[in-house]
Length: 355
Image (cartoon, rainbow, N blue to C red):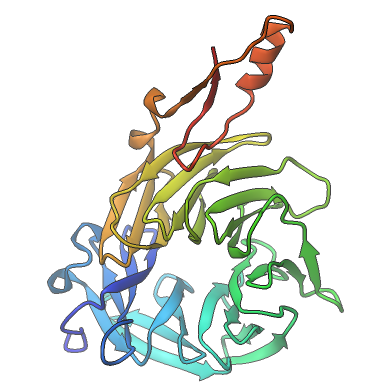
């Protein structure tokens, strides 16, 4: 317990749930005298981020933007130094122990993802590189410079170890297949109108979601001309995090610099916003699901929120009623078509209704 820092760094960037309900928090001190970061574990998420009630905590050598569970006790961290580090929780989750680390990016690490199986990982950096890592020996096995600007995010497929996604400030989203001699394929992200900031796979499908710098979220199939393309104007500022619910893959959560967290429900042909939280007072930067209904969020306001999505679904007051002149057309056909459409208007979760 002696290693626990005296204070929590103000800017919470990472929140990751364990199956037993505990949460991992990652924080950085971006405005202090030293640019440091810290890892925290809370067996009881209701007391986070109270320093006095944490189960374990440790100060890191630098700030960081991303950390993910490698397994039930190990955590992989991507650091602002350009390195990645592997930490383990021991002593019944009361002590963080540093296992290994390496610095190979020439700039800060923007994102890390664990390949299914837990023996490899993928990282992206502000140095425009994507790296594939052998975690058992802690060194990179492949380095790719396919992007021409900062690589914002990577996302590994849940069941296919050869597949992952990347997105960049160069405006492109790539599908990577490590089984091929030329592993990269550019994906069509239309109708995304601005540079992508976040990308993630939808579990149990070929779909991916991409979030843009102006708050738009697009969901589409990685296969060309297959499946419906859905677009949501969820936020008014840049998307900072996307997360599909592992136990209920139709639910997609997004966080933004506009201080909101949103959940949309997606089916094969349409989608609608079912939840919107505005209780944060600064950038919302971290999202994590626990079960099929609970969503945790954290942000630069130093707050951790636990949202029960089903109890907060949008009411009829959030709907926009659209007046339509239908004297000269078949009203019943119009109503049937409109019933299949759900739109998000100005980020307020509005649904389209006919009158």
